[in-house]
Image: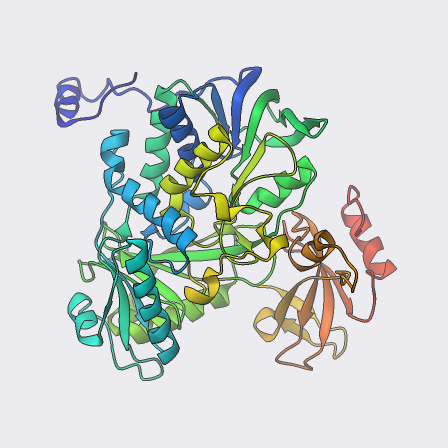
Length: 415
Length: 107
């Protein structure tokens, strides 16, 4: 067991010039064989490992990462957490995730800075008004706490907003008071530390180059640090899921595209909720540092470069300036892209695969961060027990049966 | 910024002038196809990290559909060609092979 983080630990360390802090997780050499190998040490992969250990006592686990821990989409998102989805299966898994975020800092003994500051999804057309009212009703039945609010309440919550438009006036909003943000890197680091404490091996800079199968069953993986055997293998690699599936000899209903985000220079606190505007396609929140964190749309073409097209940034910023006129003179500090894995119905895949022993957790597309704990929880159950009530509908075989979980209609495109 | 040359009107179009249309050369599953074939046609994509053939429409230009050969790992464009074909033309395939000797072929 590693060090426990607490105010007393800080005080103790202060006495010794903070020289006694241990590394948060070990960096071991890979063993020859593990019970479970998870490919991808992002939030979803690490959460899967954590709940395998915590809920099922499976700790002979390796998490392989080709780059560095949390360096993919976990470190590239806009940290928004919400669960106001229309369809029951989505609401169930996203609400599970949101509720796990509430206690995550205590569970992991790692401050993930979960901030349930409230989240607004603006309705800027009549269609959106109808769609979101429908979502509110659906959420009531699902036990997800959301409400429909009118423009005046929106203005109270977000004083800097411009309600009048003119092109897209704000007609109201879907409000989830328990939604918010969390520190994205800390989520990955906290899970990594907890996994390492349970004896799991997190192996960075270890790229999977091949997947070995025998008689339709997984045997192990070949990596840049040598071959490793396993009984069960989870592919949790977001944008690179198709590449891994190809190695295992099957295809996924996924296309990889670039999604971008950007942050402004830090300014004084001016907005203490998250605002999403799906019609004009932009979303914004203010980080604890004061930066305005802005996300926009995906490119339409396949791309693995983690670089997006400039015109999407222009569109996003243009839309947000109309909604928030005060940001028009903000300078943007940084801009970046991540490769997201889009499925045909814009809902994730947590599933067994045609190869026995291989499981996939992918297809989270543009909205994976909010789902990390729920995704890990459900994936661990699926891998340990062979089935999970949370993943039943998210099988990769739903496309053949036409059983889509059609959120792209309900939620607009932002997810 | 992606720039593709429209093979019909010869305009070097920047991507805001174009609309992407996904993987090219998909074979439509006809009547009598199995569920698997239909699923493959509708949803299962190669999504390669590397050479990719795709459909584009010159939507703010001549309005016609064409095909492009592109690398998704570097954004390099190997060439564009008209859509009235069931496989990439030989000169494009040769160009790709010259630049990517380990390319396994378009099928």
